[in-house]
Length: 158
Image (cartoon, helix red, strand yellow):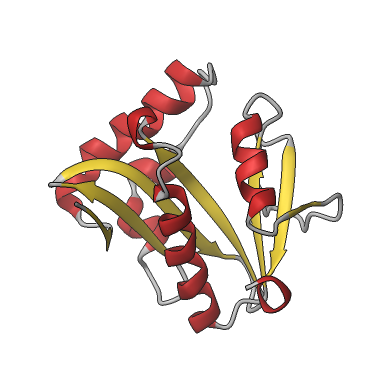
């Protein structure tokens, strides 16, 4: 049974391995800096406006999602990854709902998500849940290697 919990240090190495496996081995994005995955607590859990969640299947890490507040109204989804064998089974929806429910409680109004053209499944996933592709991305809201930015207005789509 899959359980979603806030990040705990015990899974630090598993997060690094999962994220790098998907980004580098699956998507081919090698050589990019990803300092946040080595400092989850400092990056995502320093205050009440950020968090990082783990999807665990009988104690095994099978997915992650993070949320970083950028302003009082804007937040950015980060590191949404799911092990291949757990995709298209509703886990992405559960992770996304966890992050969006948290975002609403914190008072965020707009949530951004970034991805790349080479990941059409991610683009389709976000669009399915109401995200729209945007060109008006605020400065420093997406990762340097993202080529697609999507946004969701929490109060018109949930």
